Image (tube, rainbow, N blue to C red; front, side, top):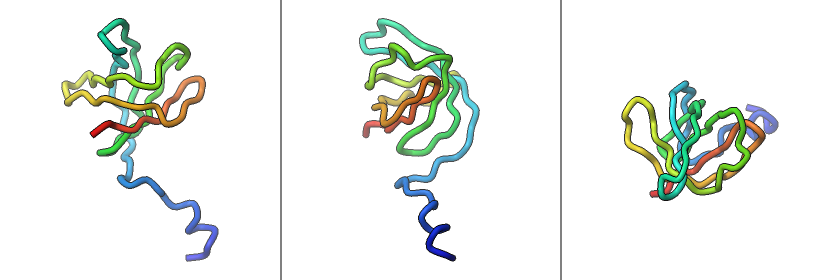
Length: 89
């Protein structure tokens, strides 16, 4: 493998799998929720997509529509419509 290909390899501690799951961003104290789509997922984090990330804090709970256990999350990066999340242990 050449060095340029090696530099583009996945560097996360846990590889993410593509998915398309419905979910909700739940703000602390259940003050508000935002619908989202989970675009990829791993044991340690996820990427979610929503109409706008404006007004979403950097710490919240992610609840899945399919009943999977909720995850407390920290935002690692964001764009106008997507956020990269790290799950708290």
